[in-house]
Amino acid sequence: MNYLKLQLITPERTVLSEEVRSLTCPTQEGQITILPNHAPLVANLVSGELITKNGGTDNFIHVAGGFIEVRKNNEIIILADAAEHHFEIDIARAEEAKRQAEELLNQQHLAEEEYATAAWLIQKNLSRINIARKHSHRRTRSITGEGVFKE
Image (cartoon, rainbow, N blue to C red; front, side, top):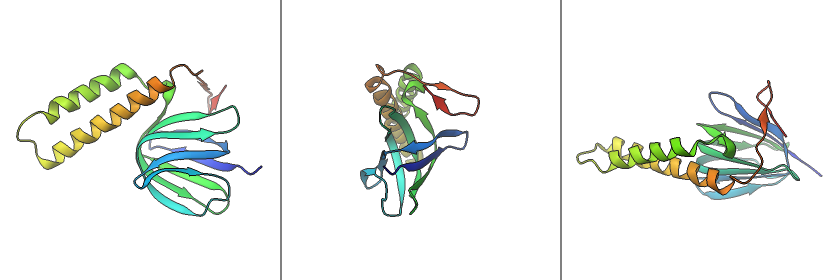
């Protein structure tokens, strides 16, 4: 069976670098699933859940926007603004960030940019909370010295 060679990179680290059977991710055009031999593609990512499947090893990752490029030779590069595995999400911190953004949104006389930022922060943190809660029953994986996750 063919595999996809996936690299998920943020400005801080390589979040994932492995071969997977499928990738589902949130784009501006909606959620898409990529399988081996997919047509080349470049798309904008939006805040949401990215899912990789590889037999018994699935990854559930929150991405906060970015870009995805699918290449002819089953290579996928994702450059994300931020990304974290479901087990890395601190629900209490995400809830507090969401609460603060909601307070900001309720203020009068917000500039257009401030309003847009607050709305984006609410969406981002709500997505993080939902992903962490949805997968809280799953086993976690540990980080090796190379920043790669191992069972």
